[in-house]
Image 1: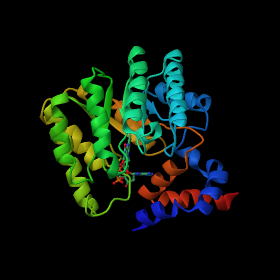
Image 2: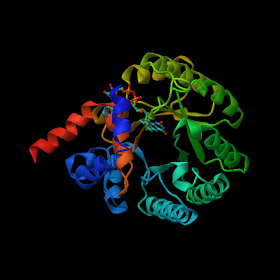
Image 3: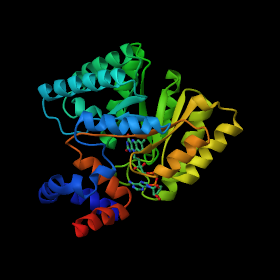
Image 4: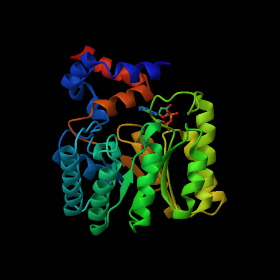
Amino acid sequence: MLRRAILAAAESPGLQRVVRRYGMRLGASRFVAGETLDQAVVVLRRLNDQGLRANTTLLGEGVVNEAETRAVVDAYREILDRIAAERLRVNVALKLTHLGLAFDEELTQANIAQVVAHAGRLGNFIRLDMEESTYVDATLRVFRRLREDGHDNVGTVLQSYLYRTPADLESLLDLNPNLRFVKGAYAEPAAVAYPEKKDVDAAYARLVERSLSAGGFTAIATHDIDLIAHAIASAKRNGIPRDRFQLQMLYGVRGKLQLELVRRGFDVLVATPYGPDWYRYLMRRLAERPANVLFIARNLVRR
Ligand SMILES: Cc1cc2nc3c(=O)[nH]c(=O)nc-3n(C[C@H](O)[C@H](O)[C@H](O)COP(=O)(O)OP(=O)(O)OC[C@H]3O[C@@H](n4cnc5c(N)ncnc54)[C@H](O)[C@@H]3O)c2cc1C
């Protein structure tokens, strides 16, 4: 209930104005590595120095024309060049709506092909995040075309809250895919997604088990310690080597657990976005854990 209320309130222009103005100082910086690439590089290096891998994202979702998407492609080229120059263990995760998916799939395909090719030349990797359920078909189509065009340095994401996801997973297995599994961060209707958390969690465990045993590369992106333990046990039971899976968490969430898993010898990646357009990303993080609203509110009171 509260989750839906926060996601709905996030659309209010008045709230957006206030949060955009003060949010970074009030605590958004816990979840976002700054507003500029220079600021992000400092955070990314610190994570690498602690033994963590990272990915980064230039935050932004609502592009409205071709010219804006070209600017995003250029920004990702610059990010990839900078990662290479700084010798960071960092790859890129991006949203296809940032490259035009809301209005032109062909344009998006051409844009992402350029980004993936550039990453490929630098030995880097691009993950296509998964967004609202209305974009799942198009995202999976774009992913498949990239792979069929010979780009191996690309992966995508499946969300366990969607009823369709087990079938999507089966349909991708011929690609020996690199897949990240998440529970799902958007407000979806009961017609397409499990309303109950226990069903989302159970589906998550089944999907990860299936993916691990099917080959390819499995990224287990959750802060849920039971599901992390389940994935590790499942990999061990099935003799899956540690280079076939990775644990992923968000910057600012369960930092101690991230380091503990590194100490235990697991490959851990921290998703670490940056950019001036951080508002919607922050709102999804607040919706996942309403206690985070208190975290922001406490900072407001302290000022
Ligand atoms: C690396 C990564 C990439 C992701 N990519 C996508 C994507 O492409 N598409 C998509 O729809 N979703 C994505 N998500 C978000 C995901 O769908 C969930 O909304 C999010 O991970 C919270 O669910 P959980 O698995 O951590 O489990 P939950 O059951 O929600 O949380 C388990 C525990 O983790 C802690 N926790 C979880 N979230 C937070 C938070 N925001 N702040 C503080 N503590 C928290 C709490 O202690 C909570 O009890 C991604 C998540 C991660 C970690």
